[in-house]
Image (tube, rainbow, N blue to C red; front, top):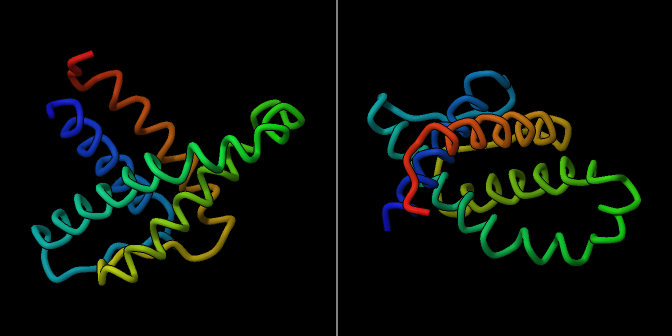
Length: 125
């Protein structure tokens, strides 16, 4: 359970940094507390997307991983961020990613910040 909470907080922090840096990734809300709650809910959706969909996409695109020496990971991360944005819209969460190239930059930022936070934050494993 602790591992799940740590990963969710790391995802929320990484998504928050992406919202802060990239102007076309938006998180709207009335107050700071509402934005924080929205960010945590979006992080849960993002974690669920990465847990359910990303492994399937990786298996289906395995030849592209080999062909591009792993650079297709940027595209896969962008697609996961776009899917999260779409699901957030369906769930009435105020999180939006505008366009594919914004998602590529946002996915890169989320990956780097999430990795750094996982190094710093405690983990049971």
